[in-house]
Image (cartoon, rainbow, N blue to C red; front, side):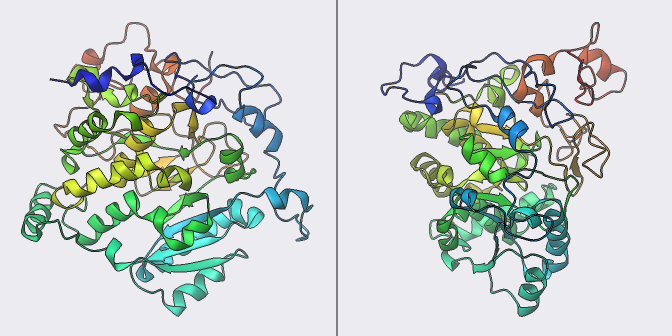
Length: 443
């Protein structure tokens, strides 16, 4: 049975007052955001309708219209410093990369593209992080790719080792079992440490205490599009806490106890759940409101370090960590970050960076109508939905794709006469009936 205590939060009378836009109750209706014809974006910005449109409301769309001209770039094409006044209000932000010495070629490729597309104009520092010291070769090669400051940090041993409450024998059995059934990287010890570190330790790194915002950059990823605005200033000025550009399914075999433990956490700590929390798009009504395994693909994320350092997120991570799921199962940072921002932040503070073309391994996102700014073929909204969970997998999939569940509104509309069961009976995947592909912008 589903615990009704968890699903009644939308009508709960919260004891503390809502004093700002940050605590405004979520409006469950969604609709298209109409853009001004003078918008610098050639396509529709997609976000749920989650706040009243009044003169006191922050307006990210207008911010982008006003500032997508490299207004806050650090340098002009001449290489001279831009006007000084905006420097004093520059966000304290960094590009962060968890990377090994052996991944030098991969991080070089990632850096070359992101520097060319964006950071050569904005010169935010790079923070490289490793569980062992970086080599001189690594430092020289990466410093040679940017005019920004580079930092090289080593993870404290206690953040990359087996905690004393973990049964090592049980952990070894888990590695063998998950490897045998084919869970991605389920047999790798280092991958378990990586997921745990990215879930609950990255924001505690002493160097990152100097920063309020981060952009996670992985080795061997691709950035396809010119980015002509300061993404950190955009996040800060609009009080956003988390940005993503893919919202896809994860392999549920990796974390069978994640949702029961999350539900137990909310029952034990209801005061930590944000009054405007909206988990509805993450719960599957067809399967007893279980977690539908949708996740923000966290190898691309731009976020608030203050959010992750907050009491609620820290308590949630500690709860999961002491339950052993990072070692007895293969808890991933992507579903944990997704559930965390869904529980502890209002939905309007989550941003779909549709304009940033990106690829990680087989998953690729490219915005529509982007020929002038991107070097990639546009993808529809559902491009990556189940690439991590093959269609033949017995894992239960939600009736709609993850990004459409997040957006709602017209993006859930189906073509007249279409039937999911009929499509599957004829050999389709059952997700081909949407009226709007994301490549066209019909009203």
